[in-house]
Length: 166
Image (cartoon, rainbow, N blue to C red; front, side, top):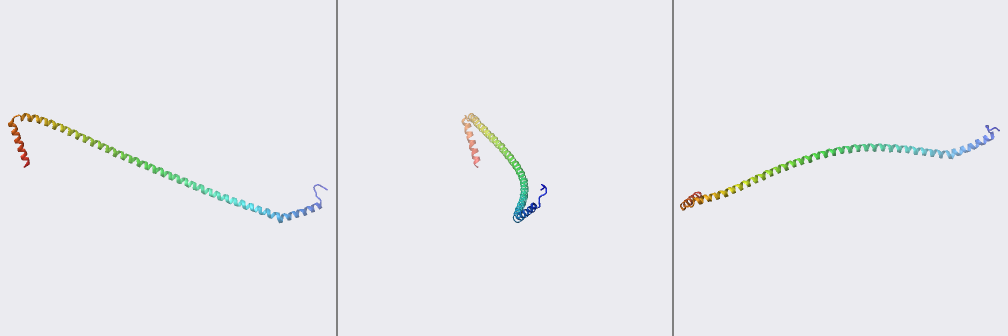
């Protein structure tokens, strides 16, 4: 017997055992293995489809996030413009109010100065009138020191009063 060439009986029994194993595998083994391989292939196909869907969803989400980001930037720009316009409006209103208040203060100061000037003039007039009365009193005392002069002044005053009534 040679080590490289088997005997015919051994080959015969090996073929029979191989046939029986092949038959058993073909009848019960291969269908199970093929079903499992098909299930595995279906599972892998489903996983690939799911991964592609997830990838598309991620791309859609990224696009949506980019749109929202751009939208929020536009909204931020609008808000900043509105805030700047509102700030300008507030500044203009404050300036206008300050001008109005300054004009009012100037007018009040002018009115106060006019009132004080009138009060001073009235006070001066009162003092002048008082001095005039004092001077007139002294002059009249000097002139009315004589009885005849007193009667003449009284008659003249009656005549003027009588003329004013008519």
